[in-house]
Image 1 (cartoon, one colour):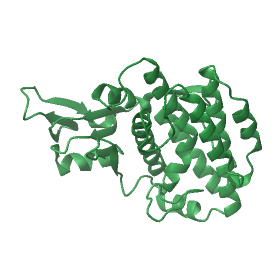
Image 2 (tube, rainbow, N blue to C red):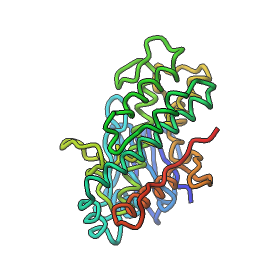
Image 3 (cartoon, one colour):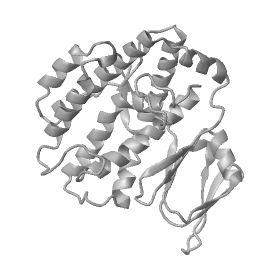
Length: 300
């Protein structure tokens, strides 16, 4: 089942009644709106004047709905997650924490290979040269000791947005960096939600290590999914619309990321469902019943 994403960009009062999310708008003459909580996957709170009841927060967390809060720049910054995401959570976390260094290096190798392959496929979709990426994907070793991931990313973005003057992939760079930042933040929340639902700690990564980062594993696992965000952003840029300011229309398009169709294990699936399959396959690797993470493939 595809879960809904709700976006609140104006002052609102959010509460719950009869297992529904109830939204009222005190500054506007609008009728209250409702949505079944069981249908919600993500709730994005952008406006600082939104009031939300603890009763609603409790029901959203119990439903494993990701509640995302935004900063003054309207970028997602906070993510509310349940303390208990899986009935076998303690056991699953133990297997995650006991994963050997060689296993982590192999899993990172698979992740980087999948990311570069998807980047190459995206360049081919846009009729651009992907020969270097195809070669680099085959050359990735255990742990990506030669840092192919970074070299591939630099080449990929240079080719992808070659027509945009002054573009380089940078958090504070020229547009469409703003669109990419927003899209990746949504993807990160999708990944963290799936990891918690699979009973793992999003903070303990297989490659990323930073004591100030609570989402190291999410940052690892989302890598192979980034090209799907890039594809959506590229299509938005290609329409010729205004991209310097991240307006409501652009956000609406980017909030479709969890419902994007991807191909995983030979079948089409919404991205958020595919992510759950990826995180479940990751746990199987930690457990020892599998040696491969299941990642989606970007198809021509």
